[in-house]
Image (cartoon, rainbow, N blue to C red; front, side, top):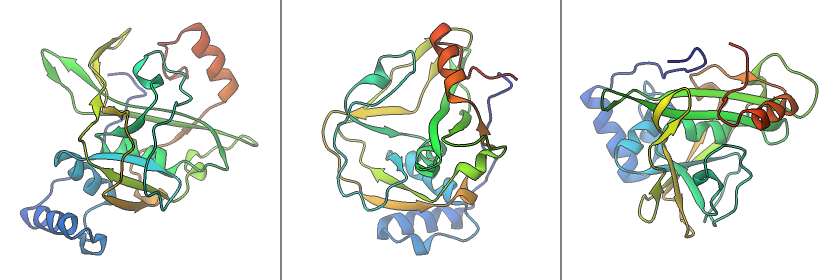
Length: 221
């Protein structure tokens, strides 16, 4: 495990919590969510039900259309035209909470490492590059957003692959070549995100990425 890799806080759901989450989902009524259960835990629970998530700063999206992404990662899967989704609530929240006005570039990842034929718990990283003057707090670059719940039918998951320096990894990364209609929109706030948020210089990281495409996250420490 690398120093930059973060893990989600441990949260144990009671039987009553699980019943309440199921009821809120079936009713598509977020007001029924228990106040004691963090919003990100509900999103993780949804992925455990076989659903996928798409985070966006934009609310009120009725249909997602396939698009060709702007992606600098070394893999080809991330460069395909389609509707992208995540089987991980925290990863989807990263895309929902980034402020589109203040953020020039986002550097992020969610992955599991293979050890002895088994997959580790998810590891995360999030760093944002500001559009304007340098900021010292990554959380200052977050703003309210929406995580859309999507059906998994028609989606293909990125296959496990070898990441130089890390070994075999599995990313919660999915794509559909067809338009997708969301089943539910879940509003999220910066305070809902439980992990640290770093900042970086976009031009510097782009240059380092060009020299070593697999050198993520191209930051010290």
